[in-house]
Image (cartoon, rainbow, N blue to C red; front, side, top):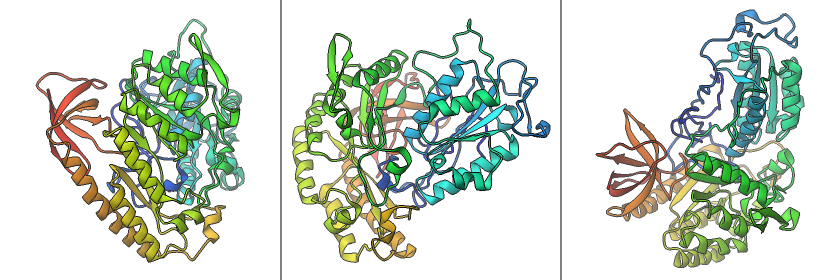
Length: 522
């Protein structure tokens, strides 16, 4: 159950051991009952491999036992909204659900609260207040969010709710009327204000509580870098614009300064995320902002180029296939940016894509992929697809199967369509029966596994740079430049010399399966 500093998430996004922070969170959706890939909102799981449910353990910033005067499940006030009588620094328990963008929101809230002197509790019943950052994209996500809120209410009783589900507070308030506050996504100030009202800060100005890079929920060697909020697209299966609004881009200088702080703090890999990464800057007309001794435009290419000069791996996620994406491929060929493109395509049938309101010319997309690979032969493309979209016929599904066999993508995730309350897609055609959805998913994944295994075996004998994620009794595990944390494959490593989490080592690949590689440090 979510306890203390939890992100409902298996050990998957983000993965690994928390370098003094925490075991990172995975997306909480299994491969079968998954978050819809169509939202472009969560990196999909590694090819057909199911994810295990789990939670993020508490930050090691607070004592393992409640501080004197903190509220416990057995000592709740008769009025749950009454401020507790806390001795010492007030403690916050936090549950973060959903995608990497939501994880960044959680990090921002916690950075602010830590700067004001709040500590993080390991358990709900050892905290003065609990914050639950919800996910509201799918009905299954809402159910899980409500369950997490219920656990927090049962174990603590003083709960603040934020996140995507908070954009529709009526459903939450109907079930839990005694919540301290409910706010929507990106409402950082409202969350902090609610915490202040629930338990005022006891800040000691002589203590430096927050590192320059802020509080991070990932291991120290990688971090998510969010460059914008919201989305201007209106895909029929997605309600993200309703929950998070239209595109709002950050100035390039602000993004680059945050990235620089992260790299100076020891981050080796920057994972660039947003709802629509390649649309970055269009809302502010690609405005320039100062960075070091020059001005940098808020444009996808310009930002990628500048990030590539910071000395860390730069991985691009949620890239909508606009024409100007072509400009970034030479940066990958030059080694400025990782040769990895996370580009959720969703389907290949023109008629299904039209119903989805997605780009519909997949023959042209195949030609673009060919050109990209001519420019950057090392390129790895990850994508996600939905099967069983309303009205999907066997012929349309066959078009998808033929396309993935020809495209030969390195990393692929597949999801069965799940209706989203309020999404136009629900009324676009006859629902595909669940058993047929699963049967099509099985056929899709079997076809992709053949492609994946062939591509993986081609890496045997090669020497690849590998970033080490975990070192422990179960062995050493890392990732190549073709693999994002946990959503893709891993490299299982043997080494005669000591290696540490965050090291980048050269590994000779000796074996492969459809998901993972195995090799030795050289």
